[in-house]
Image 1 (cartoon, rainbow, N blue to C red):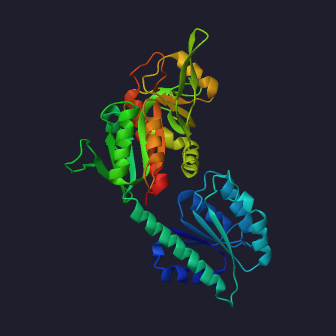
Image 2: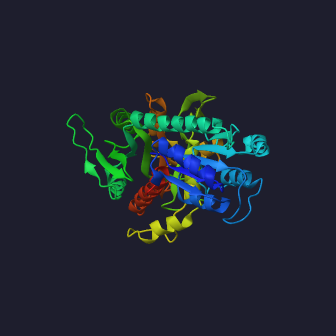
Image 3: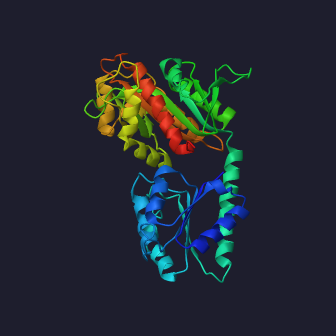
Length: 412
């Protein structure tokens, strides 16, 4: 199932594209047509589209005269602002060669640069002519390719998401309170209690490790990947925060990058023991990074989560922070170790005993590899641990997971 947005003020051309999509067996209810830049922007705020078919000469508002650079300005704006949900594929139709050339001249600014968040977006210019079917043949071929890729992805992945927690309580308990219709996964040849559910017609599964730590999490993550073949592997729960000035209890930390702060070499030199770090980092997927940034910039959603929480909580609503997140083999409560990590990573955000193992399991798994995501909430700050906000932190992590799923899968 793909969602298509047509942005064109030319009624005849819109009808031609709609007919082409119908012949490709894309249901009418999955195709939305608008005729102005303002309406297109409104659609991209509210819906994730797989395909955008765009005219470059567009009016800013319904009923106005089109401008030669309307479509170009639209592309530049949706590329630069996180509030818009960028389509996976953009097919540009224009009967004006000058508009096509204008698009080519700014390709690097609308998804062509190697370090762009939009790097994977396909921008395909197609010259339109009312008396020539070549445009139709090209667009039909590209739509067919999108459909084939979607079918292939559906065949490759068995589940849309797997959620892994380090603890049954309070972490997995909060995930299981999400309204996903969780049911026990009934299979005899497993020592893990899995629970399967559904979000917006997407299959999800969750489980907790046998015990805390890198080894147990690596084993469970690997088993979940092999057994369920998820598109996304997400670890939620509680963790330690580093910067008390930046973070508060219940704030959600999204790891980018994630690393093992114990990775390195212990040496004895000049009569002293010392540690020479060799941090191996795993980065967050760029598309997910963009989605998380969009959630980060919607404090009203986080306030809603905070306002209905009945657990003991701090006096301010949670926020989302993205940054370096470390894992180690033991509980970290030594400020000297934290300071040592900070000398090599001054933006060090938080830490736990599991995250890097989950990211590494995803990185090293057989195809199809999942997209791994770590999102844990602050329950303590290492030195001077407290259990006061553990349930609240597990709760905020699980509720932001639900927001993430709404962005990844839609909630129609």
